[in-house]
Length: 193
Image (tube, rainbow, N blue to C red):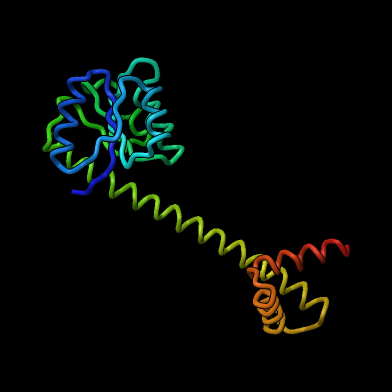
C-alpha cells in the first residue's frame, strides 16, 4: 500500500470517520473531508489529492457531477459510493468517468482493492495521454521539417539530404529545435509570396 493522499466526501460525518480509520490503518493519508459537492471541488483543486472518494448523493452539487468535473480537468481518479443501486446509476457513473462505483455499506475488503486499482489505472491513463501528446508533437514537427526541406530543395536546388543537413546545422548553431528552424523557413517563404 502506498501513502496516497485521499479526500473523503459524504454528508455523514460518522461514515467519514469510519472510512478515514480504515484508510489511515492501511497507510493512506486523508488530506481533506467535505460534506457537500462544492466544498469537495474546492478541496480537490486546492489540495490536489491522489484520489477522491465521494458519495453520489450530496447537498448542492451531486457527487457524480463533481466526479465528471474532476475527470475532465484531470485532477484525480474518483471512486463514487452510492447508498443503493438505483436505475441509471451505473450509466451516470460511466458518463462521469468514475474509476469505481461501490454500494454502501463499504468495508475494507471492497474499498482497498478499488483504491489500488483506481490509482494504478489512472497513472497508466495519464502516462498514455502524455505519450499521445508527445507523438502528436513529433509528427507535427516532422511535417514542418518535411515542408521546410521541400522549400529548400526547390529554392536552392539541393538534394533532400542536403536540405535536412542545413536545417540540422542551423538548429545546432542557433541552439533551437529543428521544428523552430523549419517554421522560420516556412515563414520566410510565405513572406516572399
